[in-house]
Length: 178
Image (cartoon, rainbow, N blue to C red; front, side, top):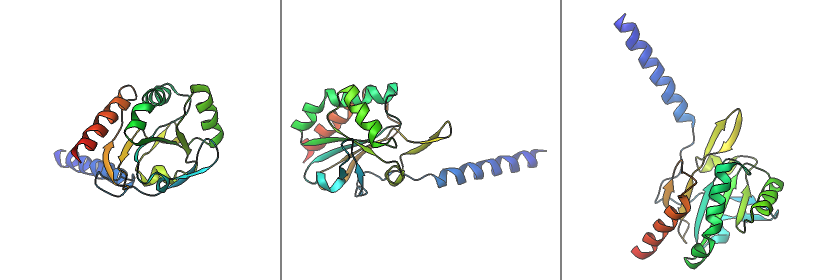
């Protein structure tokens, strides 16, 4: 009986690792940020290259008009002046479409770019994809990218409430270290 239990445990663990191996992994700090080009809430294509020479806070979030996503967006908007002072742009990405982003920005007073990744290509590149209730959504991850396009900090499964302050503190630290 003990051998059967060990065999079952080994099979269960190997199945779990196989599923985990299928999930795309987020790029690591120190690596070049994967390139992308996606439409914004205005319908214009926005690419990472357009931000060369600036810091970029690239944040992925699950869904427009949900409580956590609204809190996170409001906090980035609240701190936008501090980011601008630090030569940093805020860029949000979800799998919602352009029209949803346009409505979300209008309703919530957001003045930064929200990009529509309806094909899930960018959320895949950044290992920021999840399944929830049968829907494919962006996972709540953030990447702090330096002016040369190198990822300097990776935040996985972030809490929306204090996240903007955490990113600002890390941005300050990274800029002071140069």
